[in-house]
Length: 285
Length: 228
Image 1 (cartoon, rainbow over the protein chains, first blue to last red):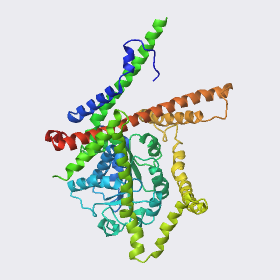
Image 2: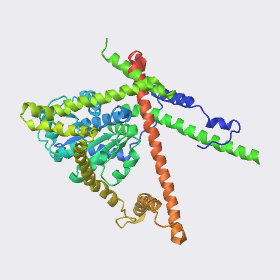
Image 3: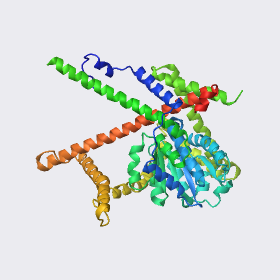
Image 4: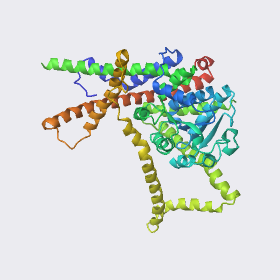
């Protein structure tokens, strides 16, 4: 913001030390994590669409959860992945985790899936599996649409994917009922749309970090994406639909109060600027 | 000792170390940045071998007699001729292969990505079916709220990027006003994007505070763990 001439106490509102802002924000987050005052979470239409798309997958088809994220976005993509995995187990759909653009994704998502699978008494290789990280970028997608077992080779645990009972009868992209892309990377969705959803009409949904989500609303409007989760808010909304409050819901109260603090600071800063400018004009007159 | 304890402490020290950047640029935060980059690079090499090359290159070549796979790394190593002026042409061969593949992918993806976007922008400006009474009100309300707003924003934003006509004369001035409206709509969209950016950054911070509070400190203070 442009600085108005320093004219008295209003000027202080624009010169709040950044350490004070950091401490205020940290204080609000700590307060809300320890003693949350929750706001109601109302699922948006894009989140409802993801939930519906998962439930609509035919019994004989697999869901691919493409976990193309790493530690840098885990605070958002982690709860999203957990919410999607829970929705699959809830509705009895079999799924495979995979990732092809960020090597850490398969490991981090595996750490999330394992305890949830135990909660639902799901068996690895029967109800879910992890194909692991596959090197090669878009080549992986190009190859897997024609031959999934050969493209995937070994799973995350080092066993051939063909040895997993749930992979029996899974040959190519026609055996996939839905792809859920969870990512914080731009360009990944475009590859799924351009190489899989567009040419083979495989339903595609996505879960994005809040930063990148606005750019992808156009894809939901055109029907290329069947639904979309936006940041932690999307994860919290899925948890509401699943009636199982989890990590997303826990973060949301701290998130909402953090936003209130930031909005208050923006309003105070602008009010200080306008009042200081008004006073300077009056003094000149 | 619980094997989780060293992991918790390492993660907590790394988190706090990186956050020292909030005070100012300092060697501690730099150190942890380098550790993170190094670990990520090392992990990439490990999973590339264990989950890719071992099963799909090494095993077929060594155990299944598909000896022709030996040529794959030879082709890859041609990249290193970039350091030789005399043999640079060999590096260009594989670079051309990579560029050609990338161009092919881009071309192949262009229509499936963009064609539905264009067709989706043709929206009816009146309800599809003849409707009466309350239904007509609802149907027109929906069309005006969704399709008219969409069409107006699309038209004005496109006019902002139409530079072939000067904003003079009757048509030019009308175009100028449309272009100005388009600029406002773009600014509103950028504002929404920035708002989402704030939300994303705050989520990352909350995620780390959750870890420090409930996992790290909660390991020693049961009351904290029970709040998590």
